[in-house]
Length: 237
Image (cartoon, rainbow, N blue to C red; front, side):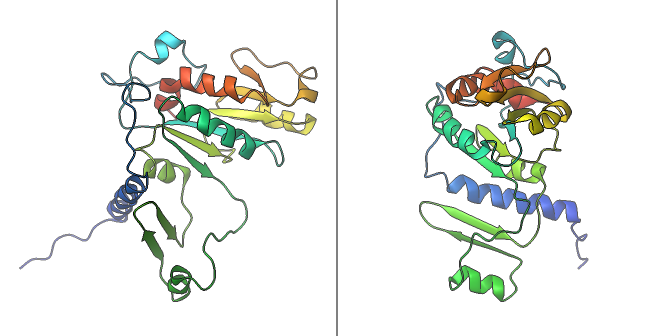
């Protein structure tokens, strides 16, 4: 009997991501989407290139069922990224949306604790572990992951809010806390909005096509993400 062809690394990567996606799906507490509020748009798929978000009529005109709405929240240290994301999550959930978060950490981290079974298994040399219960699932792999891989693994969610990854090409809301942050606002790729701290409101001019918000007005930012959800879902990088 002839052996089948050896699977390529790409095939293995996609298989691993598909398995991970099923774990993540089971970890959503069994809750489905509210089809009357945050359902994915049906019909023909439309792709938007880099540029300004669409009007409300354009943004709801067509979409893809397979992609979440992705928005990066970027800014330097202590600019309020985590606080803003934590404010946005329940505001988007009021529309019946599920929200996933991806965070970039420039330093090494460990979310497992010494002495646990999974920690011992990692110490023994396991390259990946998964632990699941009736309520949640955790997966830890001893490797780095690209943002594209992580978004693919979260493709069943309505929104993916990304904290950091400044040099990636997804649409961005740039947080401006002080004058040092102006360089980030100037150079950030595919920025669609700026969230300004109070002391910066009178010290800068936002270029045309970029929405401006107060850092404290999370309700307005959430409304922007909701109204432009198809733009964020179908942005073509």
